[in-house]
Length: 635
Image (cartoon, rainbow, N blue to C red; front, side, top):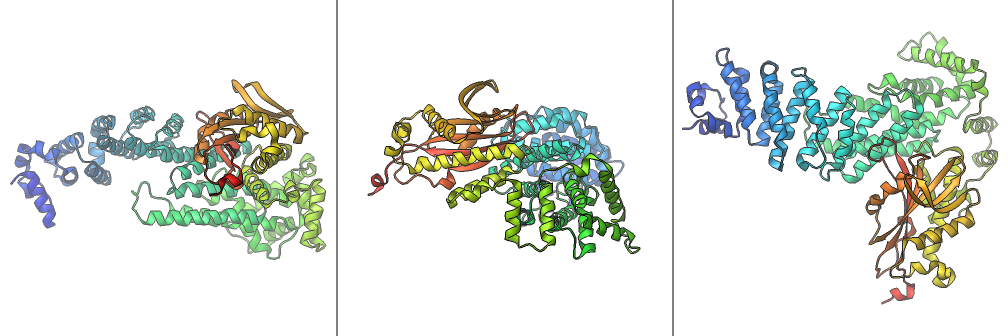
């Protein structure tokens, strides 16, 4: 009986597969070549892990040769797990094994070799993480991975690159993750890992502007990863977490925050279900303790946001403890450093505006029973508030929305009805929101949806926000009119909508004339040169900032996925100004039915351009061409 047959017989009978059980070292040496070609590398690792002192050298050599010649990916990984699990064995053969692992990682031309190559890299990484071998040669190999290699290898290698970045913070690995997004097989994994890396970089910073930009770039990448792969519930979880933190920092009301938390709950439930259906390796398994901490923190935020607008609290102790938990997020959540830059300013500002809240804090600190984990946090908050109050410019300096909140508090104090409070506050702002003047419910829905999604952008604020809202609203109205208006009403200006072969310039001319007549706060120009080394189709200038509209013509249905192929050019015009713009596409389809509804013709999208870490934001719209009159659609 051959050695391989003896091993398989022992396995099938459930007996221990020892060297002695198959004939000992002498038999193994004779049939070594056959054994190395067999799918039993894990057996060789087991022999080495339990070998006596006299047999260790022979068994270790056999293991290294086995890793050099293994032809079965599943067995390779099983053997790797066994090797890593044996502390004695991995330290004994780890450094000698690197040469074999590097050679296997380099041979990745097809799926079979590519998967073994990925497992070889994983083994090498885990040895380096455990301090068994140095990381330097491994990093040089990881940095050389390109997007045009075998897809199965790249998909697994992407996760390895991501883990290596988080372990050692080598920023060259960010460039690897970015370029691996171009691999069709690995794009979902690479986009997620790149977003995860940018998230961690953002949380390490101490500048609020940089943090906001970094979080928005990460959120954009997570959303893109979820679109690429619907099963990437962890991407939706991270996007939801960022969304909640951003909205809280920007002063979102409790209802908006609760909606964001509800989205997080759905994504987290889906993630838990998917994880329960399969077993992840221990070294990749999620930290459930941290997940629970994060959820408790984020679940508290909507309730806290509602309390911060009040001048006083009915259940002060309960609210204050919840507030201190959020205020101390940097330490409450392991790995949560950086979120304090988003969460703390809103909490501190509420105490500055409402003396009643500060009184609650003072009462809590005077309570001898208040000696729990948050006493130091409460003291730090108190010192911060008094420090801010001592600065002449800080308390009196009007912040965006600060006086509105003060007015709301005063109206609540006198018991004013909610409807009356809302109207007074709108009057105080000096403007009525544009959506309140919109009668068409479809326009209201589109406009509200786009504005809600744009709110994550750092640039979408103050006067820039007002002017961009105006432009977006006009584009929505343009799209509606170009579907509603008859050829007689449009005249020669709209003839291109019914033409068989219209040109892009027709849409450009039509949209320009529409905007010129409706936007009086900025200049509208076409074919403006000297922007991103190109020429902008439509330029809407507002002095210090500008909005660019890129226009395209497309044969076939324009879905959000199709429109993504044009996002890069449209986003390139945002490089040196505000990161807000529009992309319009003339959709040419020979329809036998009606054109698409207006709700499916306008949407929000974003991307992080290659070589950049700042998200660009776009409102995308399509204008159906080759239109037919309703009477022509009757059968």
